[in-house]
Length: 638
Image (tube, rainbow, N blue to C red; front, side):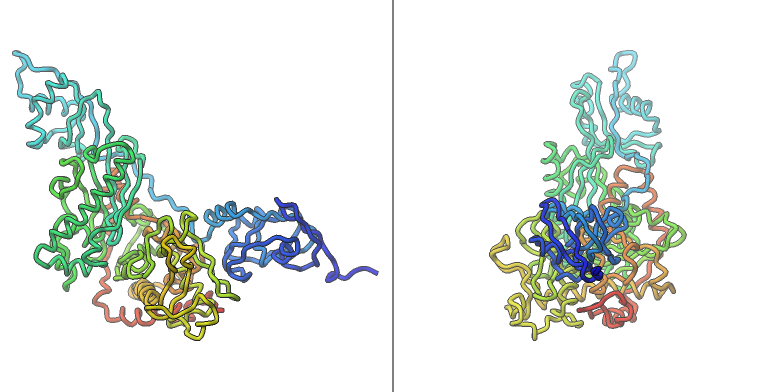
């Protein structure tokens, strides 16, 4: 008598261990592994939500339901989720070691789609190095040293005018003679052909590098790249907390502080001090000197640009919200106190309006949005939330004050996305125990923005958080992770014995309130902007997300808390620090720098600050995921 399908048993072999077992038809691969004596981690409790139990079918057949954690490439390669795939015959299954699994998840996660941050701009820095060999003066040719030098440089680079500043002019005679009339010069060519401005004189035999710096001046962090202007190569990158945080965590606080006696000067000094520290670290990495940096391009919001230049930002926060300047002139480093070549030109990318600055101009430039034929929503999520909507035909922009929570400020154990930061959290639905992923695989020291989003989503989906964004007090005592702390209810992400700082790492009701308000401001700005231009969410073909914390964000979790609109995952692309990328593009390409000005002139600014409807949208978004739950059909709390 033949056996029925339910009585059939199949052999599973698990590689690379070689362990095998006989299992009934239809059993989950996860259970088959357990039968063979193997343990496969399932941080989500086997619900198919975390994508962490990946295995690859090397031989045989299994039934494999569709799952958003699996890319098309993974499906072709035979990857399945062991908690979802069922045995359909004899099979050989590869169970990846932890390190291999981590590399797979990091590389193929649906939240990370590689998008180039350059749009094919021609490489043409405005600062260049030129070698000159001058004929020494004699009785028949006794032109002054300056005229002799200008004539030689004009002949070499075909410009009509050569400007030499007084500090360099004072040394010109001795330098020419000491170097036997053979020199290298660094010149700034602001208009591409009419005029050259001398930056530095060097002996030809030294072959000094030609260095430039691209700098993103964020409200919370300052990030910089050191660039070789001879070939465009990025030599290194570094970042530091913006020391202005000492005088206010957001731009409004700093604008207010700038109106105190000496406040503007102090804020200017603090950001210059931060930039100098970052640049000092960069040049030390290359065994160079900061004085060898011959040019800087900076990108920052309008307030940060004003404070760097020492411009009073007072009127940015007063109706009708007008900055001192949107297009600021190129200044010399010595005018700002920057510890680079004193004559190095410092170019700030232009702003659009009081609350849409050069960082967004840089983002539109580096993301290629300005030439896209798809209806695109661009977001830069940081202390401020800036939004651009449009394509190559038209673009509109607006901004909201999001607050610094996702950048680590205002959160008890918040920190930047560096080694030791918890960047992802999964909560087991049965035990309410968390599984954390830490940047650098180090002991956890705190939690960064992507980790906060992940924690909120997992706590909400598993009933730890209510829709109002508060920890459910009835859960206290049911799990040691949920307890009352000094600031009210809290959830323990890592125990003191596991952490790098020797204390429990928690997320509190106060933290959650700050995070919910931040996500509500961003989503409210998105929805109101779409309403004002008569476009529905479903019309958006692509969502580009800039900002440093977007490098680690999980799109599923961001949707689940109502930070991002509920759209198909393949429409989201995370670009990382587009402000820094745009500054780099403008540093190495005259074409990109000119396009930045064109982008500003093309963008239409929509003022949301004075729009009474913004508060209505903000209030509606102060829930998980939103008051209008029908706008988030994919979110299914457990």
